[in-house]
Image (tube, rainbow, N blue to C red):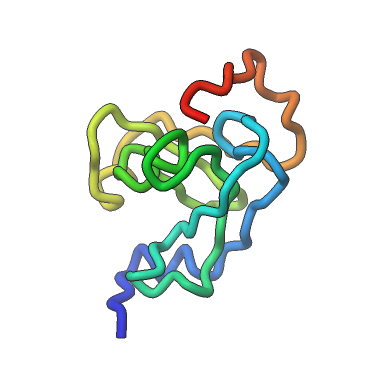
Length: 115
């Protein structure tokens, strides 16, 4: 059985966020990202819509540990220039709210780079 650490346990009860666009950049046609990796016990946990695949776009950044998510009355994300463990990312400033209801909140929509 997969090991679920204390950080994963806290995320497992959070709701999924699947508005039909990337919750980080607003790009259309997102894929489903398991916030807690399936290999770490997250198969039935929350998913977020992210653009790209597991190797490119926001989804790729999340898989490379350069895009992190937390839940506290709503989903937030943090982008880091280098891969970080989740526990390290939690201590950093700069967390931003994920887009949940309004894709127009993106002032400069992405130019589909990496799609």
